[in-house]
Image (cartoon, rainbow, N blue to C red):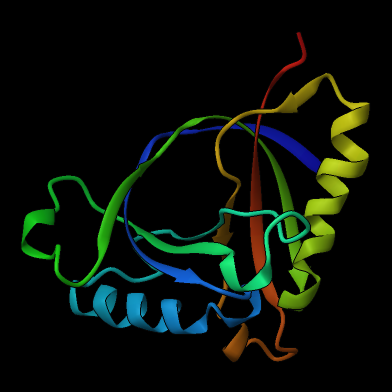
Length: 158
């Protein structure tokens, strides 16, 4: 089921991974260690993945992925620029698709939204990245599955 929602703008710290989307664990580990030292945990911040390239159009070794954590208001970014990078994620209207399965099948969530739902809706994709809100740690899930709230940026069809 897909719901339409508005997201605010988010300030995030991130670690970029270049390569297979199946190998993003290194970026997540690096970000997680840094975030933990700052007191940024899943209990008080969002952890968001951003797949920046379409694996059907870009060679696997060149795919870019940002592992992100939202920052609290007033966070002093200048003190941390050597460990992580910073960016602002655009707010706006998104289609929300909740996913729970193994990470290798996350591509099916994208196919459902872009291939099935979007063409039959009153919306079209907007020119912002999709946001993968990580709602659990697959390593500690009893079935090894990931729970992801996939936010696809949309706008009303012209």
